[in-house]
Length: 370
Image (cartoon, rainbow, N blue to C red; front, side):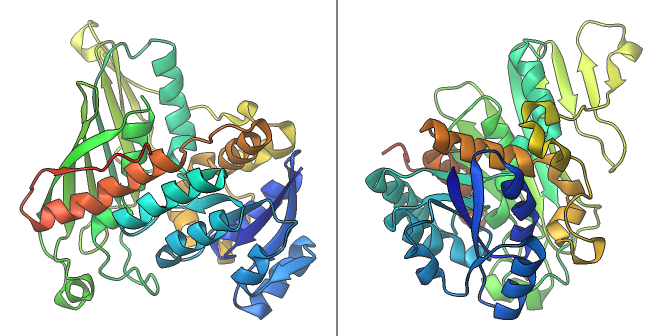
C-alpha cells in the first residue's frame, strides 16, 4: 500500500476519490494553506491527516508519495523538496518554469532514488490511447508527421495566468507528439504571431497571441508541429493532436462533440475519410476505478475546476494517471513520463518561447538523461 498525500485541493480534489478506491493506494493526507477549505474537503472525503504546512507534510515519515496540484510557480520547488525528503512525486503540468529547474528535478530524482511522474493528461486520454492502439497494431503504418494544438481563452483566470507566454504551458500539445513513439525532442524553432492587449503583454514581456513551433526529434526522421494560444484569439477550447501515417492518419475534430476522422490510403478518394467513435479504455484499469473515466463523476458542477470542464473531462485520463503512478511505485519501475521525459516535454515549450522572442532561432534542448 502506497500512502499518498495530495497537495493543492482545487484541481487536486478531483483525484481524492480515485486514490481512495485504488487497490494499492491509501489516500493518507491532504495539504492546503487555506485551513477552512482543507477541513471542508477533509470532512467531505473522510480524510483524517490534514496539513496546512507543506514542510510539516514532508516531515511525516508515513507519507510515501505526494501528488502536487499547486499553482505552476510552485511546481519545481515543491517537487525538489519532496524528492529530497525521500518522497515519490507526481506533479501536474508543467514540470517547472525554467530549464534549470527541470534539470534540478531530474538530478533530485536520480540522487534520491525516488520516482517522478508529470501527470500529463493528454497521453492518458481515450483519444491518445485509441491512436496508440492503432499504431501498435500496425494500422497507421510508418508514422510520417505529428501535429498538435492547445487553444483556449484564459481571460478571467486568476493569479499567474494573465499574459502567460503561450508556450510556457505547452505540455498538452508536446506530450502527445513526443509520447506516441516515445521520441525525445532535440531542438525547436518557434514563431510568435499577432499581439495581445498591452496590459497583458507587459506582465511577462510576451506580446504574442499565438506561438507555433516545429520540434525535431533525436535519432528519428520525424518532426512535429505544435501551436498554442491563450488570449485574444477567437477559438472554442481545443486540445488536439493528429498523426499522419503511410497507411492511416488520425485527425482531430474541429468542433467539440463532433467525431475525429481516420483517413485510409489507397481507397477511392471519397472513401478515404471516415468518422470514428473513440472508445473508452476503462478496461485497462482495476475495476474499482473504472467508473472514473467518464465525465461528470467528480465534483458538483458548480465547483468543478475550469480546466476539467473546459477540457471535456480531460479525456477520462485521471484514473489512468493514478494507475500508472501507483503501479510504477509498486513494481519499482519508472512511470511514463518519467523525470527525463517530463523535463524534455516541458523544456520544449520554455525554449520555444525563447526561440519566438529571437525570431524563430533554432534552440537545442539539453540532454536530461543524466
